[in-house]
Each structure stands twice: as structure tokens, then as C-alpha cells.
Image (cartoon, rainbow, N blue to C red):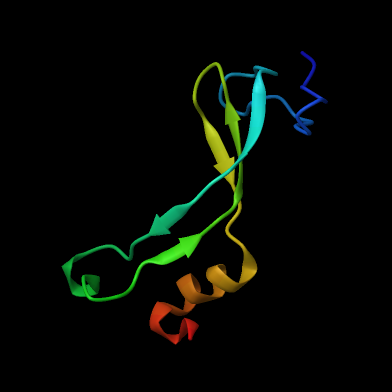
Length: 79
């Protein structure tokens, strides 16, 4: 199977093996789980997302700054 070169996606879908994928820009709000974290602010990320147009599987990477906030567990320190 060949991946789509015109969309900048160079690997087949990890879920179904399809080459029918495209890149999009996403807006994702990440919430800390559980009631104990209900007051923590949402960590917003705007990653590039590769979506398989056959099975719907999506893949993205969290940018470094937001990843540090998630690892630290304190999104309020984002400033």
C-alpha cells in the first residue's frame, strides 16, 4: 500500500493500513480526570491531526509546552 504523498502523510494508517489519510488542524481541550480535578483548567492544544478517511482513526502529538503542563498536573501555571 502506498501512503498519500499529496497530503504530506507518508505512512499508512496504523489501524487499518489505508493510505486514504489527510492532515487537519485541530483544537482539543484536555481535561484532568476525576472529580478531584474538576476545578483545574482545561489544557487547550492546537495540533496537526492525521485522520484516516476510511476508518476514522486519528493521530496527533501534544506540543511540548502543553505536555509539560499535563505532566506537572498544574495547568493554572500556564500564565
